[in-house]
Length: 241
Image (tube, rainbow, N blue to C red; front, side, top):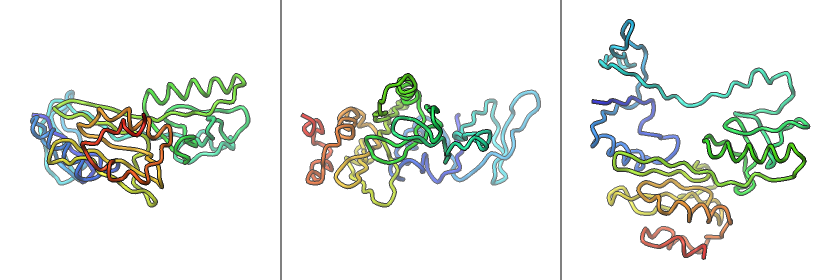
């Protein structure tokens, strides 16, 4: 039996809505994974090998393997005296140039101005980092090339396929259009700002991934298309022909 303990109220509650989180949890549960919410591991039990864990509610769970995932922390203290502008990461413009002359940044630590979405973002995945490295290197060599890339992440297993596209944060000034529902096993959320799609989360709708990437990349207006976008049977490719 596998178990998963999390601090969140539901799986990935910082990325999407509760319906999406519960849909993923249902797939995990059906595959034999036991879930526990709003808990932390206080202590790993055992001597030369793992024998169990003690949780924040006082309970102890026996186990012979222990895997930790707590996110990413960016150690920026060593840059404090440099004058480099930092936030959660190293702040840069759309060319990945920092606040200091002749200094560029790339990868997970880059907090850059997104040339497509038009706001500052920070993304962490291999494809994004590789693409940023190429652009930063070209600009170091004298080019003037903006970083234009719609980031996405996909994962599949246990009978469910997941994708995150673009900027998925639901903050003031954004609305969410729903495609499908957890009840039919295919559920998507389109994140809209003004008359543009800026991001999406997809569960068992990953066939729509590249169409959504194109809608974001080409900044296609959708202000009069909400009915079609909310129709789970409408082909999104119709908007990019």
